[in-house]
Length: 464
View 1: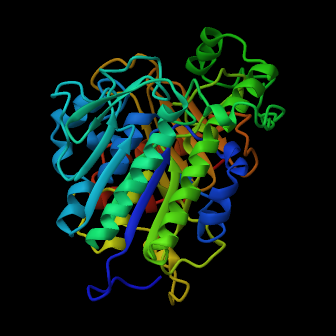
View 2: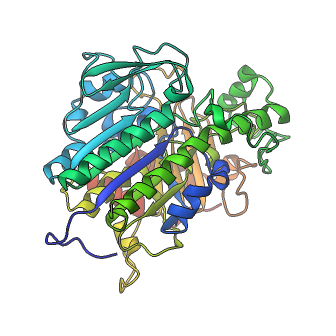
């Protein structure tokens, strides 16, 4: 990757984030794979530090773990983020100070705009086209929704032209064209609602891929879940049975709903090519969290410390990134903001816990840089009882260790047991458990440099 030179024209940056997209959907995105993955870098070990929408999005905006954004759950979500003053200092304000024209489109933080005026636009965003939860006229944001369009509330109905992914695509095209006319570098953050439930496809896609089947790994309908913590087994009991047919039917809808997002990628790449901007534009494609559908005999959902929920796709193309690059290092959503800032020559904030991974694009780097060996995974506000589930855990390079709020623990050897079928926490010796607990205690309260230190300080005497 070329180093940022203030004499060079700043690169444009487009960040596309699907909602609840897991790896099983990626093979069906023809344009996304061809135009981003094959033309750039695929990250095989990219994780979210909290596998649920609002905490993950807050971490992406600020480059912080949830315990430092203060957002652990979807509710109170936006209001909590705003009340803590987090909106005043995000990737948007950093990019704005660096001379970028900025735009946010689609889903923002959950429950936006609770606690503020309905026309509120957070600092740093020049262009704002965001779904309003308080004005929602249906159970989702695919049709019958309201957008705050730069302080004006605009109603959308249920016609084919109102399908939200297509509306966002058209508004993104408009924004890029305007930026091209002003010759201003732009940062576009676009967050369609797909494939979030009810996974409504665009009408033109409703008859496609009707025969696809959900890829069922070894953990699907796990026969013996007696090793799982009681809190996990209770989710299974309260959620009811989730049969093969249920998984296949939902998967069809999820695939169909992502086809319009795939077409969005095609339309934006074609536009950039026509405008002569493609070679100077970074395009990110990812998701806010993963999704499980029958794994460990659980109903469909997210929020859990299993691979289906915490490991998500990340694809990036752009200047200096060689086609068909594979990045295997452990990266995370807390790295997104500092990476974008470095690529743009912007200055990130001192509170950032993550780290830029832009140097991984440099094929000529003489020596590998030190990098993390573990990540903190966390969910549930420690100051109040979680309505769903709460835990803190460490996702290492070859293991997962989790402590739940009720005192139960999990440990999986991901080399011997990649599908997390056997919780071997009960077989670990006392010394190893004490070491893991102490390490987790450091991570779950870390800030900035301390986070980076403890991510790299893997104890030598962990035995499993």
